[in-house]
Length: 423
Image (cartoon, rainbow, N blue to C red; front, side, top):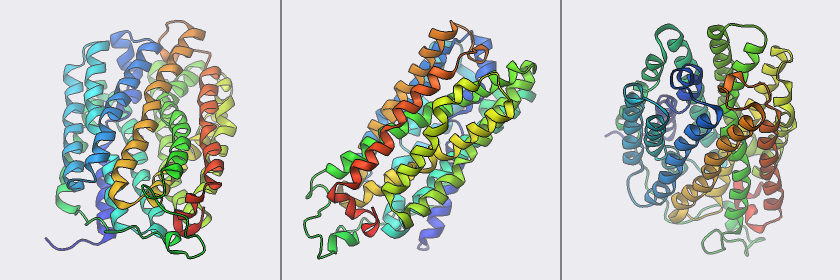
């Protein structure tokens, strides 16, 4: 096989990610139709969203460890292929709450082996001063995949039913697996840690993990927990929220479902350029500064977003889009910063562990969101709920941990290892 360039590998990984994770949010995009057919409540919806995240968490830590041992390309290929397979089965075998939970759990188990090994693979191809941009682009592709799943599933479902919507967003994942097989190559792990800060004679005491301890890794992971608490519950619930807002303005069910899901897709899609652009900015301004700014920008609006139910739909959409841009902008920065504070031999393990605890809270936050919704609205179908403020406020309060963790990390000596000393 002809040797690949780092840019050709990045583009292949971007394409495979864009296609491979489209099943992730097709359930949220089709929630109204599925909830009506199977009489699902807000609490049921929270459990289903949580089941998918649980599957992801079960696998992601193991694949992070495995990424330090075996071919990363092979892991990404099989994970992507099986994600598409189980996502297609959902269209044929879903028959109620428990079967939906099991099928979404299986899909999540497979999807859990894509992102972290992909991050580890790209980290081997790109040096620290280019890593924020590369991982940001890869995360942007993940976001584009989520948005594409929302948009394609909702559009196809309006024409042919929700099962067609599921299939149309599941088959691309199978294609994505063969993109990985054909165009992605592994790169040998570097033999030694090479961050420029570790070679700076003015900071000889700064050592990466495991030799220098795991303090920096712990602090950046703490911030990542707050980031993930906010992010995935927002993505999972913003679609139903916008459908509910559209219904409150007198649109019929079909119009509201199409408009709400379309707006949600656009809002999620904003995260694609946000991840790439903010990843580049983090390469220039520093990791912790970028995290603090992005976290503060999203929280400033999310704390009161839900209280705007019933107000101008245009205003709600614009403010939700603001959150959609900033809520994901710093996601890859947590990964890039972590890879720069640990040695290559434990890089996959640390990335996996960070994802376990980060995605672990994504099991809880969507369910708590749904439980709070049901407390204030009763056991109604989610898009018929009228009280959304407390649920969104809880997401914002948990998200405070991201900028707070970045502030603490700036004071830790290992933060000097990030991006050549740009904290």
